[in-house]
Length: 527
Image (cartoon, rainbow, N blue to C red; front, side, top):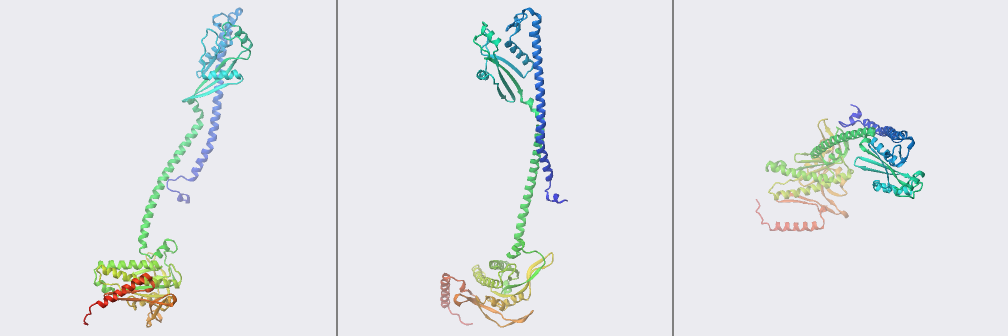
């Protein structure tokens, strides 16, 4: 398959064929017009020659019969009179000659009529009926006898041409008419217009239609070409519409598939892959990340007290809420390991090592607060067991990227620093956030913490000093201490830095009410 064939849709015409067809049509128009013009000129010349021949033949025949023959039969008594037929040897006057010659020509040429009429006929003769055009022509010619008056009219597919010329009075005519007893007018002058002679030619349009055979053939070819192009375009439109429909279905399918795939990927990774920013290939890079690891304390024991459907619903709601908080703060959810969550900051998007660490801490605070809200909600639904979450955070260099095979890979992180985050989580109390020194050094300007006893960890040669977050540094150096306590009958997580004045007032009222409730509680005997 050639490149042009590959770029052309099925059933389409090559561009060069269309271009050649259009050029041929453009070149054919002047050629067809020239051929028809030449053909029309030839036909016109033949028609003129034929008509002239017919007229000459008619005139010669009439002249031989009504002039020459009559003179030769009676040479001694030749007269020129209007009623020549009644007098032996007489010949017709010009008016009579014109009238009778017009009849002869009309009989010879079926489409040609001749009229010789006047508004001053001799007495005893039938008056000439003049129509509106003939009256108008006669009036114009008497004003200016040098002109010719014509009219062209159409009746459906028949055309008619009427040509009117003046009949001028010559000296012999003037003498005759002014002295003739039957003449209605006796003051004629030489050059006066006595009447008109009119030639009427009828021509059906169909007779001339085929004079343009080349143009008709050209337009027929052009119409066929146009219909072919329209048909081809219609076929192409249907083909394109089908392809668009198929493309829409494929896009809808891909959109549905990509939406399903997005559930298995973090929003940042999904966005970077579909935006073309990250290749789906086995490759990794070493980056400094902030790693978050959380776990639910005594989750195995909790699952034994709940039905599988209940624990599934609670865990899914918990993961949904935590994932939404992670996305809000820019964290990449690596994986869910049972009830644990692994999240890291710094890839595929980063705001800098310090900002990534601060974002991770803010996320952890919001997660603890939201977990307390979920526990309260679930208690209202009759679920006694609570989720007590421990969190560990570490900052360090890890290998991040795609690990696996060409057929199956996983976007994750590998390194001792990730394991350290999991270890820090394991030594945290429920509700606590434990940091490594590397992370604490990045966030100490905004958070307060106290250190725990150093721990030794496999893969890390140095002792690791954990730090437990105590509070948030407010403006002016004031510390907003965190309070996190979870026990049967109590779920308390207090972060004063997140409360505005209205929330502080309501919290104070609730705490006072809680103290009053505790004081009013009947004392139980020690067991």
